[in-house]
Length: 164
Image (cartoon, rainbow, N blue to C red):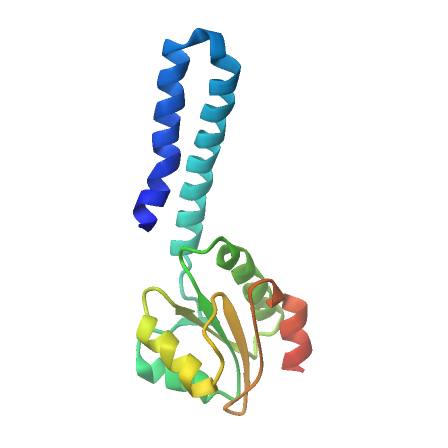
């Protein structure tokens, strides 16, 4: 289903391009349609690249196994960030989490990609008693979740405030 949705702008561009060539009288309408489709194609390519190229760093650990998840949930000071590689909101708020990490190097950041690690993501929801969302951020202190939020609630300021 998702692949089909990603193909729609491409198909639209082909349709509007063909109509431009065959129906010169309606060129303004087809030109706008073609331009819109091409913008969507470019936006989707950029979003896909930016969401999939998040690489672990010394301050950002990728959660890929139960042991790393246990480490994150038992941390003295950590941010657990659940990220969707298909969500445009995730591609924006990850920057807020990374900004927090830059100004708080003593805090460990954990990245859990919810699509690629569905089972681990479900474990977080179960263990913390917080319904799944993505993007979603948890402030962990002394092995306890002291605050959580999702979507546009994930801000550097919010993380800083609850990290104390």
